[in-house]
Image 1 (cartoon, rainbow, N blue to C red):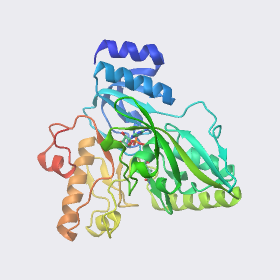
Image 2 (image 1 turned 90 degrees about the horizontal axis):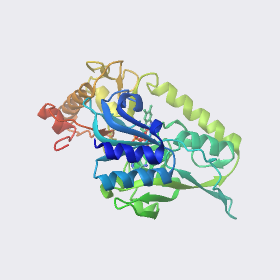
Image 3 (image 1 turned 45 degrees about the vertical axis):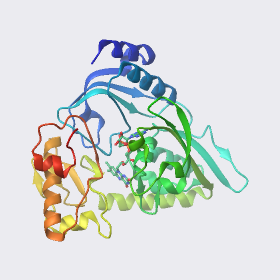
Length: 326
Ligand SMILES: Cc1cc2nc3c(=O)[nH]c(=O)nc-3n(C[C@H](O)[C@H](O)[C@H](O)COP(=O)(O)OP(=O)(O)OC[C@H]3O[C@@H](n4cnc5c(N)ncnc54)[C@H](O)[C@@H]3O)c2cc1C
């Protein structure tokens, strides 16, 4: 990594915010991942635009992440700069706009935690995001993934979003512009970064909203292996099936590669029993894919995103996880 990039990032953000050789296992919910050359915490849209401009001008590879809750980072780490968006100092509802029809539009910085926003909105009687109260990602990551759970997803309550283009232009997009579909938006293919999201919520009874959150939290705790590191559902839901059920029916409940395991509690989750490596997780994903394909003729696709240097893995694993050329 060029010294000049580091010096320029330190100038705009302060040297305590620019970490070198930072282990990514400390910044992913899988608790897996080798070092990033440079890791920077970003707390506002202004900081993000400035940091991305420096990386563009210095021509260094740069990756924007949120809470790392849908990420598998390579054991060899990431060469380049990782910009990790996190909560800012602004009061969450500072920019709430009340409408005559009983709705309220709230704009939130992409680094805020989605679950914190959903819970605080509900407490204020701004309803419509109760479904998001257990998703451990940021608003930006949730926008990128069109995150969803139970009876809701980002597409249902997003009014607009501000994004930054590769060229450094700030654009306001409608929800429609983002082509939101099942766990997908067009941000990645366009190389755009979410700066903020404006959600349209309805004013209602806070107690009812909080009761719904309590009900969903109970369901999550009962069904999901929340006491182990994971990245949530490992696979996308194949058309007409549930990934977890297929994996269970293929006899893979509890199946292990090193410390990577198909959760005994919920077969749709791959968990880290303690010291799993990225290679363990990828090998397990390849094994599961092959077994489910052989038993049921269904192709599972990973929902989790891969980041970093995955070179040198077995061809079979590279192909299963579509890692060629990375
Ligand atoms: C226990 C557990 C439960 C989960 N339950 C759910 C669930 O119910 N529903 C669900 O949908 N997901 C669930 N997830 C997965 C995950 O929380 C979501 O996908 C979440 O939206 C990811 O947000 P993040 O900030 O952690 O993104 P990261 O994991 O940091 O990044 C994910 C992707 O988004 C990109 N990205 C991040 N921020 C931005 C940005 N500002 N602009 C553009 N791209 C960006 C990254 O580059 C990466 O490609 C769960 C995960 C865990 C660990």
